[in-house]
Image (cartoon, rainbow, N blue to C red; front, side, top):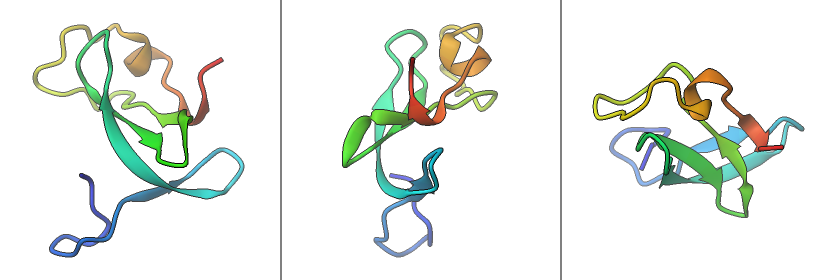
Length: 75
């Protein structure tokens, strides 16, 4: 899990497009295999990786890289 303070058990938090904070949970893109994050309290709010693809990425042309959703719901 992404951590705010390395060495501590504080969960990562990010703001959504309305400015509200959410605790995150990691998930895997079914199309390319890269990690993206979902809000724990509303899994439809996501943060996709954009240009931060992983070494094991299967498709750098995937929607999560070319048209990433950041702190919002995919429309």
